[in-house]
Image (cartoon, rainbow, N blue to C red; front, side):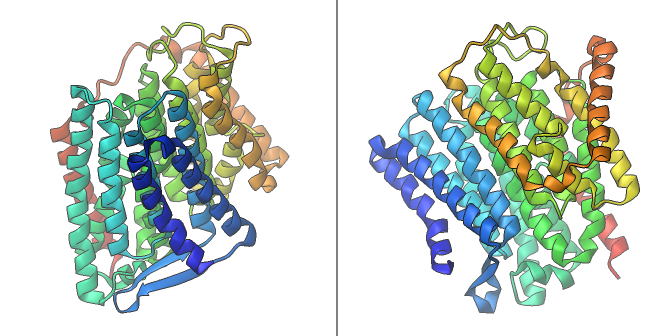
Length: 474
């Protein structure tokens, strides 16, 4: 299994380069890479294998694969497979498949690594591949959005690298566990980089514009898997370093609240999905017990929503003409999964996360769940033109089916009190939206998303991190 893991990590990079050299194999190799990830993760989750592969013991460079890795890798495989199928239907070029496959391999590397230097290399490759995918259409807008992402990504990764060096300087190791006795400055710099890459709280305000203005398959990839490469290492470190608990608590709760509040005042459907992503990432970060299942639930549902949004005639809610039944079905099932409807994977994932939280946090996130329903209500009300099917809907239908099948992962959630609470929450949100919220005219005009303000927000987050850690550390 150890040797297979090494092959599994490096094979997508090889397949990506082959796809570019042999254009006729591009879609097949991208599909093969995603299927390999699905098979590998299934083996890990079914056998519950956990192992650590030391690469450079003197520097703490190692790989770790466990149940948490399995869920994140499975999410990566499913989302990439759906995007590859979408690209097949839209006749994407070998260049697209090359970047997608390399990105896929880099994301898997993050989910397997257990040290800061390997993580740095993987995140930098992810940043470059993501930039190339965002700018794939080659028009001025896409190039600017890509450069904006690349500038912010490289800036925070420079901070992250300095923090990693400080950890090694004081502890003689790059291992995640070395963060336990690291300085406040090192923790702040590392967390600032990871929180920004993960789209968390104020440092994640780059996310709405980037996701909304990218092509639908790129938006699906960003929301489904890329942003989780910043969250996964934080979860890993939080399991080892108890001082990170207040950071996770504050930033995850703030992220859920921020995404819900701003998303309620959007009328652009892709921006609605983007702000919903910010909110849902808070659930992934806060739920160390259920982070893997929640990452899977959110990844497949949000990828399905973004892929289907590319088939809409307009992005303005209220102006969308009737859509095919297959597109409406994908939008409805994926939205209801994010709302937490029983029978879909989002229900069990949310209940697993809430079950391990303090009572005040549990109540607050349940309140935010009403806001999630209000955000996604307009999607359910998009008119449908009969039972027409479109082949372009097949990737979305595949992901919608996954949300149903994956609901079997946590059967213990199906207790009458939890089912009644969830149904009541969804009904309340639907009632609030239908009886009054949809008449609200005020819209969020995105001042926080301007580049100069994004850099200012990083300063605020850094100060907040330093203040919390200085108070918590002895």
